[in-house]
Image 1 (tube, rainbow, N blue to C red):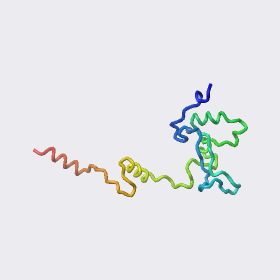
Image 2 (image 1 turned 135 degrees about the vertical axis):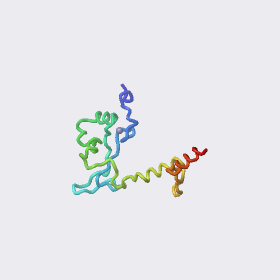
Image 3 (image 1 turned 180 degrees about the horizontal axis):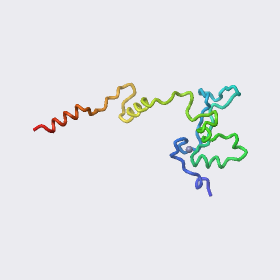
Image 4 (image 1 turned 180 degrees about the vertical axis):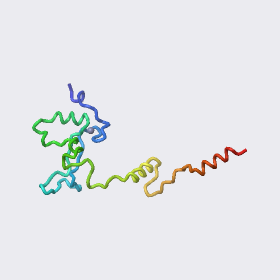
Length: 136
Ligand SMILES: [Zn+2]
């Protein structure tokens, strides 16, 4: 049986988008390949085997003797390593800014131009509409 026939499809995986592996970041990562720690020099990033079917399948094909030095996303997510899924050198995502960005993208408004307010219905609008409808 060929590899493609047994290889699980994880293309909708939120962690690896179907690669089976994902990058994780040292808790002291500041954009460099090597992080200086009190214990010595450690890699800034690592490739971790994903928790999805493809990641598990790929990990299952590694040699037993190699596994102790391989990183699994499962252990990262459980906080069992010094590595994280989020980049420590990036500020946390600002939900309001992200929503504004998508509003711009959807309506094709360039950055720097103000977004026109959506027309909202106020209680006064409703009262006015009712008065119009009930006019003799
Ligand atoms: Zn995955």
